[in-house]
Image 1 (cartoon, rainbow, N blue to C red):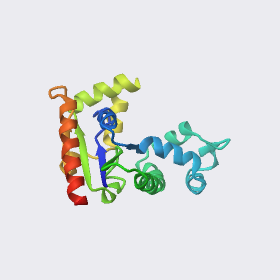
Image 2 (image 1 turned 90 degrees about the vertical axis):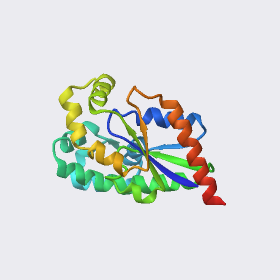
Image 3 (image 1 turned 120 degrees about the vertical axis):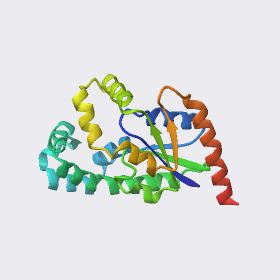
Image 4 (image 1 turned 135 degrees about the vertical axis):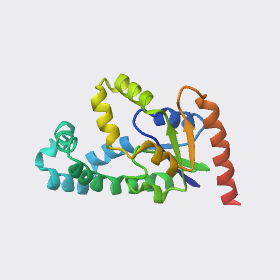
Length: 199
């Protein structure tokens, strides 16, 4: 079975692409959702987060998202610290989840495939590309946040052109090219690669 990464900057439409793969019968691991669950459930991780960020990081056993966001949002060092605690736990969880699947390939959808070190556990990575202005407009509309807030989040992510160069395949979600035919063509290619590996 192939392990495939799916990544792209904020507002690129990687979740939309992931949903199309799911419609084609491919299981998708959503790293952001998983990280939220692990931060709630993993006692070792909870203890490490409280040690680093203070007891207020959790209240009544629940992650205090507002408190933690305030701590890391404008502080690259603290954000790096949080990621260094959460990413290894998520990578382990994704590996366990992928091992239980029975399809030719599985997908891990994550914004920080390269930044987190996840890429080394994956066979191929798909990038979803959209121009910066389009990504900003989509994110402002979806999250109801300001232009500055979006660009600040974008600045915390790896440069988009660099990210696409690191990917094995790129899907263009730029409103110029149809999305579904690109995903179907790539699905066929990945099935072929997975079958080749098995033979």
